[in-house]
Image (cartoon, rainbow, N blue to C red; front, side):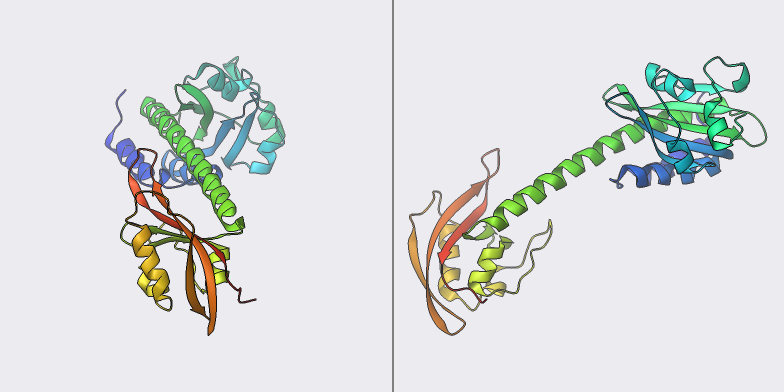
Length: 290
């Protein structure tokens, strides 16, 4: 049965939110808060299927998440387990007469299940979770409710995958950040417009800079940050137009009123597709502020 205007409006409202949330539990709670009330349901849960087949409750409405997590959910057992196994949505109007319903979760949580609406959360064509709502007030769930929850399951799957990708990118960025900051050499990275993209901890120490990198954003022009070091600005202007790494050269600066000699090497930076992005300047020597 096609969705009605109410269901389409609810779906659009949820889609505006979920693809900008990258934490699974926050995502699950946001969806439950919107959908359970709109469907007039007494309870609801969102689960994630772990690699070992265990079904882990991410969020709950109507029963505490702690009580759900004390219960055991497994693929192939119970209504949630059936949905996880066969990746098919289900509407159960009389759970007691349905062989898939075990009632064990009601015993643990104290909740009394009278009707069930459940759908798989799909990722790359297979079930990676389950979304479930219980006990529609005023009567059984309708066919459009099941269609809505089925569509949500597909969208949640995409959001879960986006969250996992975001987490991997964050981990990769944190790893690269730690590597760059642990280098004994100072590193100054600039783009082709001579805007700072990264100044590692050693470079800040060598140049006595009070500068904080702009997370994921284009930084200020090098002239604004390094104006105290005209010779360094000239070097950066030269390396950003060079197509190959430079030889190691010497650079004399006045740092903190004292003459300091640095060794430097310019290295061009390219994307994986070979597009020139900017340059890195590697610095050695000098005096620290500490």
